Length: 235
Image 1 (cartoon, rainbow, N blue to C red):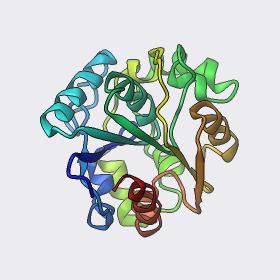
Image 2: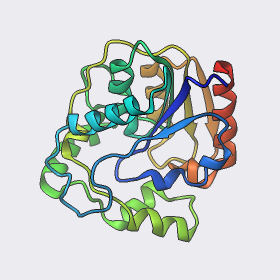
Image 3: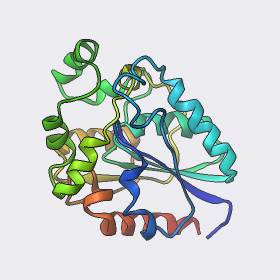
């Protein structure tokens, strides 16, 4: 594998790098696992952050990593972050992977990826109730195929995000070549939304995993096999 090549991993809202712990030993390529601000430090620490306060620390982490060629591996709302980062590093980006990722059209926000009427109601609900769902909602949306211990970890370590992460309109000018979207057939959000994201990404390849929203926890062997196979084209 080219020593100047690497994959940048971006997780979804409310989560942390703990979700990748079972996947890390199985991947066969250099990887950088981006950490978002203020993990597990309080319910309102992130509430007023701007979207750029997610982007700038990620840029710093990537620049310190010093890899010449980058593939972004994005999960859920991490797709929005990944689109901005791949645009920023457009001269170095050689691939993009979405794992049940939100891929808004340029000029639109994460909220635009939601079906009607959620796309209208979500900004109002975020303003009224914040970004920490009830535990039962986290279990239903994120943990429907996880073990009890995994479910407990996700619920207990859930970090409320900034409103801006959901509502900022994402402008990007270039979609990377070599795109892969991994559909999650048991995702509580549904397959139809993922099909729309595939179209927005103009994904060249599509794979499907029989899993819920967190295949890196429930199906790490299957996910790693798909990722390793995709990355081998660059080695």
